[in-house]
Amino acid sequence: MARQSEIDLRAAINAISDVIHNRPRPIREFDQIYMKAADMVIQSEIIADWADGKRVAFIGDGDAISVCIAYLKKRDILQYGPSHIKVFDFDERICNSIIRFADKERMSETLEAIPYNCFDAFPDVGGFDCYYTNPPWGQHNEGESVKLFAQRGMEAVGHKGEGVIVIADDDDLDWPKVVLKAVQNQALEEGFFIQRMMRKLHLYHLEEEPDLHSCNLFVKATPGNKAKRPSQTIDDPDLLDKFYGRNGSLHVRYVRQKKRVDYGKAHDDEYALEYLEADK
Ligand SMILES: C[S@@+](CC[C@H](N)C(=O)[O-])C[C@H]1O[C@@H](n2cnc3c(N)ncnc32)[C@H](O)[C@@H]1O
Image: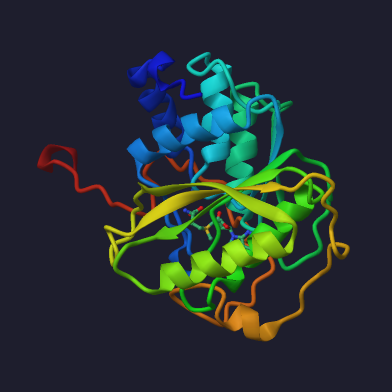
């Protein structure tokens, strides 16, 4: 049931603005490409509704949709949302920014984040009801990067729950169709079915492809479904070589935070002051 009419749009946009203010700057080499603000509002409402009362694992979340849905519920802008959210992301800056925001807004009991690289075996198999992922979109690997994130999502729900995969969706380009097919095939092979696809829903801060949209692909486990194998660490240098779009061969376990920065404010190494004559 769509519940959008109940939202105070001004309050929702201002809340999303608080979340954006708190986010680290994206590292483009790792396909951190943030969703645009209006689309974050719409996406947050959709995901909060879909995951109402559920435990949700986010497999990577630079966009901070996890934070948005927890915060919109906490501030009573949405009356629905997940009961618990945990983000698994290899970027410590992203995890720390989520933990800091959750702490400041007194949401630490419902919103958590831990450093995790999806090449490692999943640490909490079956611990969740749903998963959400907006992975590297697999332009140069026929969707293998999306499939690895989705695999970890399916493990998070013990191959029993449901998931949303956010990936490229375009009428003119070929590669998004190849990726969508590969990801849908994987879901079927793992005992899930495709429940719904919300087409061309979001845009991103992506200079070279400003009109490239993504869709929400909803998958759900068939009753009685079981995992075919335990969660395993992947050691595949070839996959790592083409895992990310802009720069292949990034064999990185974690992105570590060097110093604590306040992301919403200018850093003092960004500018110099030139004083008025009288003050020299
Ligand atoms: C790859 S980006 C996809 C674009 C998305 N709009 C975003 O910027 O969040 C999604 C998230 O996956 C994380 N990520 C990238 N590689 C990862 C890996 N190997 N293991 C876990 N998380 C990873 C990034 O840090 C980012 O937060």
